[in-house]
Amino acid sequence: MLTFGIADPVGAIGIQADLAAVAAMGCHGLSVLTALSFGDTTGTEDLQAIDPEWVSDQARALLEDMPVAAFKVGYVGNIETISVIAEIVSDYPEIPLVLAPFATTLPEQDVDEELLLALRELLVPQTTLLQVSADELERLAETWRDASDEEMLDIDAMQLIEFGCEFVFVTGMPGDAHDVSNALFSSDGLVRKDSWPRQAGPFIGAGNTLSATIAAMLANGLDVPEAVLEAEEFTNAALSNAQRLGMGKLVPDRYFWARDPEAGNGNGSAEP
Image 1 (cartoon, rainbow, N blue to C red):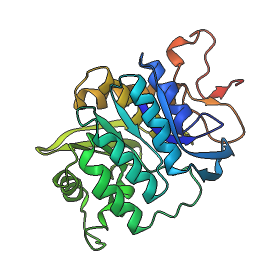
Image 2 (image 1 turned 180 degrees about the vertical axis):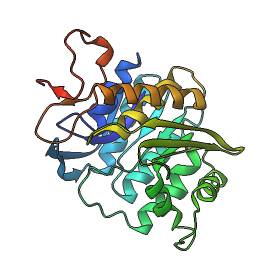
Image 3 (image 1 turned 30 degrees about the vertical axis):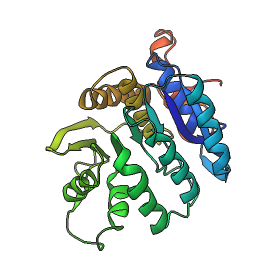
Image 4 (image 1 turned 90 degrees about the vertical axis):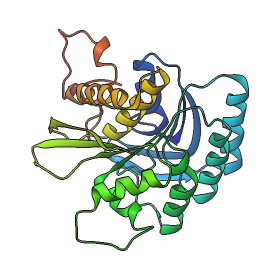
């Protein structure tokens, strides 16, 4: 599996988190850096975008050398990088693509309407599964409609499918504050809706774990609804065993299954 994303020194989000989740699913992960960052377990303090030509060169070198079973696109940062990635993945239309371009833990980003429009026009039509939170979906929807006080989530998800995305996976659906609910949409409408008890956090890297695991499951040959369920179950287990590696948020343990159960580290401290 090949993932595009930000380098996170903590390993909670971005490339490092993707590679950990992918490895836990039995896949070999390839990575293309779109940005460098620095920060700690409280969040990312700043980042520096990689030249789009370097993004292209990294990806082309890997793709000319090795077969890839799935793509995941995370942080993109600017329109030029979106254009480069869109051109690359267009050469491999048979390879499933998971698009999860938003991250709440990154510093305030200049995600203007032009960047959102580029995402919608260049990457969404090539996407197998778009993962967005309910808030992110509403923000993206404002590239084709006016802001509304009405409940538009289902309509917005279906509009993205009209734009060419095969599945839209919405996390953090409105509902009971004690639960976390996610919904998967396709051209047939709502495919599945899953709810889980909300776990005590705060966490950093939950969404990253979810999207990377979905991509790995697609690389393993699962269909999208099954891949989503497997990824939700894995992510919940990783959160149940999250580690307090620093003084900030808890980091999901993507290798919980390899730990000694007698040792136990759920929401406990651990040395990196």
